[in-house]
Image (cartoon, rainbow, N blue to C red; front, side):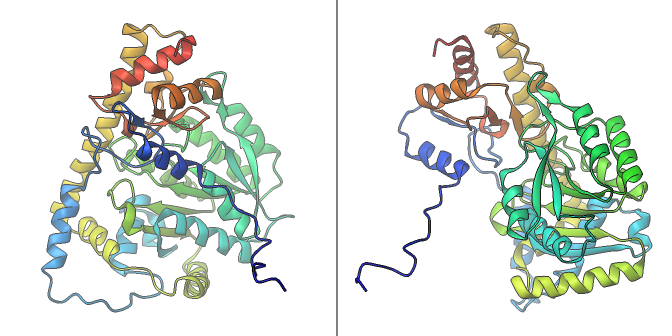
Length: 412
């Protein structure tokens, strides 16, 4: 055998992740006015990562706690964290919690929660035919990979309507009604990624009606609670309503965005069962799956979040920090809308910029326009026209709006 024939010679070279590739190109660019609106991470008005003041305070408390050690956490995580996290998303007075019907497991952020939830369904859900999950078109790209990796086939359901740059509600409902009974559908709890288009509360009620009629299972992904509107309770309305209506469901929860703990990977999976006995069975099997994959979750980030959630003063400070982030993004939406509609008078209707919510916005730009912004204006965004509003600030928003206007007019 030749010396230069390796064991892995037939392994295909995978393409780089599109978002990280975009970020790498942005970092390598020396153009002074370059803008990165591709990455989904909060930046302050100086385009800097922001460590929440309450996180700094909680970290200082932990560093000065002589009782802390580095022993393993339980397999299902830090109990003070998981119980508080469940109350945050489901509501402190949730009957499901009071009745002992909720199983909560600490995960490796929201990605880990999605994976553990998917793995659990792949092993134990009584599928009506093939193991299939409905994913909104479009959705967070990683959703497809996560479900494929555990043998669940992703199928797109209508969600975004490019004609209205809004929700294809009738198409969504039609997909729910035409699916086989007891199908699984992934739902974005708030601040839909990547479109920023959410159902109204009235529409959520209708969606819940169809779930109950068809016996469907709701796989909620909640990465932006509080970060979307600035109000933790408002952003949990859909999940809490589904629990109230007793729609079978689980919830994947992340503290990357709303606590700025991107690198600490703090998340949780909550499965709402029909009874305490069922919840105990679910927890036993989630423990087995978690043990085989990560053994025990990491402690530092969970301790930070636990301290914030369980300390009334820190919790109030956190809510103020969340409002700071959410309102800065909302202000950028209004400023961009004003520049496009009033100053530049950009062709088209741009009201979707302020009707969408959360970090991301589907601008309605096509591939040609998006590519022109990247190549000619050095504004780094994905080819589908999605932008992260967090990448805009008072110093670059005029250049962004001017460049977008030129891209739309074909004069860039």
